[in-house]
Image (cartoon, rainbow, N blue to C red; front, side, top):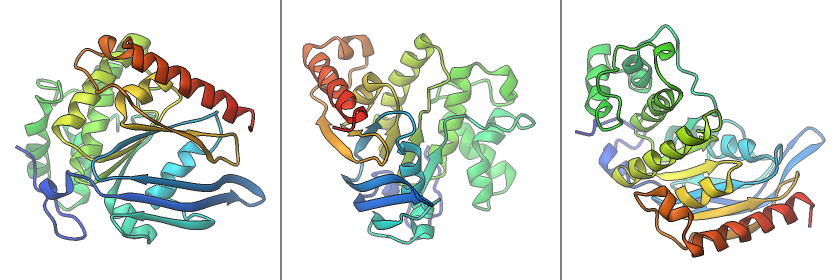
Length: 271
């Protein structure tokens, strides 16, 4: 059973789960004299999953922080569900950073329930809401485990559950599987694809892995070197399959991966 969570518009989480439209128009950003983003335009439909790939240091993570209202753009506008103010964007976005940032002194279930506690739920109610989802997330039986007792993949599941349970319509995921080994990463990609099918949200995923972006996303935006601009937007020709290996070896998928890599190479050269 999905917990009913409060949000600024007093809509239910079942309404929010469809996601919210995300629109960036001519977004620029600078740190002092250092320009990081140059006129970025991007639109994501409610429930859409868009990947951002680009050279290291090009501003992908900064773009996520701007979307979530953690920073303000130097120019242009960002709207989440039609709301452009930073606090309104923050209220509608859940940000999952690259590291899981689980609190080592909390149990897995208390880590997952932090967002609900921050919304004012008592500990018992927050735990009960999180426990309903632990089995579905492959975490059943590990509610009382400390983060040090969990595998890397399980820690990431707890971190994603913490992000999802906040009830926000937009999820901003920053390299969520970067620290995992190749086998665990592939397993987590399959798991995340299934999780997003079961509980759709609008998602912006930052990753250095082109194959991961094409497997998990509906569309992939390729960014150039700093100051970053979008040099290509690629549709994903293959619907996500339960079997990741079958998806990534499909000839259409292979062609899309080659096209994305060419765009990434051109963008890294500033062309």
